[in-house]
Structure formats: C-alpha cells, structure tokens
Length: 257
Ligand code: 13P
Image (spheres, rainbow, N blue to C red):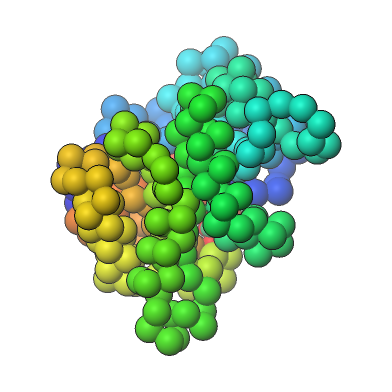
C-alpha cells in the first residue's frame, strides 16, 4: 500500500441511460456515507449523455464523487461530427477523462499518436487524463507484457512536461482481464505497475514517479480489491462491470475498511 491517495474510478462504458445513471450516482452517494471519503477519491466515468445529469446530482447532493468522460476529441472545436471536446467536458465540471482505453484502441482504431493527442487535449482543457495501457493475451503468453505496456506508456505521454507528468493517472489494464472475470494476480499487477513507475522515474525523475497514481483494471470487484491494493505500486482501480452497482462500487471505494 502506497502513501498516494487511492483513486477508484468506475468506467460505465456504454451502459445506463441518463435516468439509470442518475439513479446509480444518487445511490452511490448514499452508499458512500459508510466510507471515509477523505481517504479515497471516487470517480465515475459515465457516457457523454449522462454527464450533465451526473453533474446536477453531484452538485445538488454535494456528493463526494468526481466525474469525467470515457473519451475526448483530439481537437478543440470545429467540424468533427460526433466528437466531444475537452472544453465541453470541463464546462460540465468534469475533472477526469479516460484516454486510450483498449476498447477505443481495438474497436475505434485509436493509434499511439491519437492517444497522445488526446492526452494533450485533456491537459489543454484542464482535465486529468487517465491513460489506459495494457497487453493482449498473446503478448502476455510471449512474456512481452512489460515491454508492450511500456511502449504504450511512452507513446501516450510523449511530449508532456514535468507538471503534466506529475498529474497524469495511468491505468494498467491487461486486455485479457477486462470483462472476463479473470483478474490479474496481485503480483502480476504489481510487476507491471512497478515497471510503469520505474519508466516514469527514468524519464521524469523520482518526484514525478512518486506522485503519479497507477491504477489496475480488469475484473476488479469488492472481493479482490483489497489484495490488489496491498501492493506497493497499485494506487487504485479502474472498474468496469462492478462499478454499475452502487453497493459494490462503494465497497470497492471502502476497501480500507
Ligand atoms: P471490467 O471491470 O468489467 O473487467 O472492465 C475493466 C475496464 O475495462 C475498466 O476500464
């Protein structure tokens, strides 16, 4: 367990319309009353069309929940049909945005360059990117998981200054563990999260490496979060399926007891 403030982020993916999202965030606010929210940062990443409703609920109820988006346009504004810009997200009170999720890379053709542009677009709009990295099964089987993941890391953070690097959140999500129920072992998660921190240290120095939160993602639930969080370099979780149930996600946020 590290001294960095743990961050538990719920990626709702393409689930829950605005009414369902409202119900979930209100229920999560209730459930978090049993959690010491000064010790953990709880974040939800709803679909774009839910964000305005989530904003209203969080502000009205003064809920201890930060929120953000699952994606961001590389561009600031203009003729990019279907895209949502960083300034639009910050105008909704978003503080985080996921960038380079494996589902974006796999199904939407997001390259390293696009991911890097999106990380920069997030910073330009005052948002904190949660840069997602992680290897597919073949790379893991070939023993190339660290190398593969670090290449994605280096591509994603290319050109960031020290202040930006200190603020970024990295999520290590091995593709084979996403939505499969097959969670990485705490040692597997630690191995890659530590390698990510070492790479940050080599590029930006010890202060940045010590500050950056590195999350693990892939089949995290309340039953396995505590053992993952015991690891020195795991500072939180990026949670998919288990973030869609308020009680379960609040238990994840309350992993410290
Ligand atoms: P699951 O928790 O459903 O495996 O999803 C992980 C994930 O992709 C979070 O971004």
